[in-house]
Image (cartoon, rainbow, N blue to C red):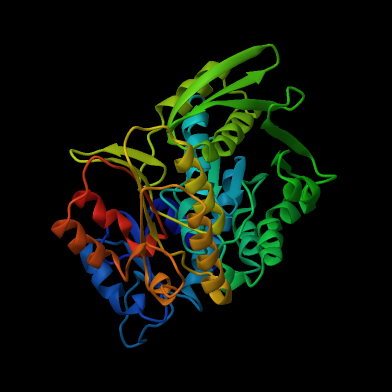
Length: 433
């Protein structure tokens, strides 16, 4: 079946699902498969559950069902359908990638743009080779602009996602040490994130660049770009941090007007995310006051940059992702937050650092020795492996061990930072803090 023919079917049944347990009316089931699962085995069940069609790449010819669409490769077909659909819509699409801040920036930008436009944007962090096409297939003719988050684990990932998405505009939030297991080196991280610049440059699009980031400023040289940053009125959008104890407040200016924004985001490291959303929103003509109001109304979710006051303690929760760059930034911020309460840090290990994992975690331990936190708790097997290094910190191999300890020795009247990779699941300890 040609992609144009499949697209015609999709327009009649415009809901795409890859989960046979979620088969709403007028949906098409795409039978994806991986090392531990095979969606083809659930195609018949998806049809019985309510899907109108199922796209498969494994199917016995003995079973004749016109609702079964057999293709050579389901994932490739999903991606091709998404690209075909995106090209038919002809709306501007903004692609966002970077080591840190992708999801927060995407959320801030989407809420600001929605003041004037019908916006389609990545839900959660569906930012990989499956999530991106699924995002594109949520777009329809009512949408006026798209915001697509792009993640990467290895070189070439962003190039692939750009070929699927065909963005007109691009933003790289920053570059840092993350996913080194797949990238190998920081240089490879930078090169991969800047594959977005390569695509935009080739297709004569526009990029938004933080002037304060020398890597990105250099790599975007000669492009059609809009610069934003800190404390520089000559930029398209510029701002300054007014407060971040713990909630970020910042001032930003546009020509002769200035605005104070009091966000619900924790930490000064969120300034770059906020000012980039300001710059892009201004470019697309959103009223300045509406931008400021939108950023103030945004409520962080999913354990990202959140403040929570429990019956026992004050918590800063940033436990969705962690790498050496973001963890150090969080610790530096937390050390400067004024409080009368004793400070406790609970750090989960940083995943996907490959051969540099022990070295980077040892560096983090060494950095902690320079801080003045009252208590430090480390969670993760790699911290246990490094426990012979001299330090007074409590170490647990996993979050369940931490929880058992908290049950026996409850922590009260502390200001606590929780920071770690998502797979460590530090959020499970929140109910015991």
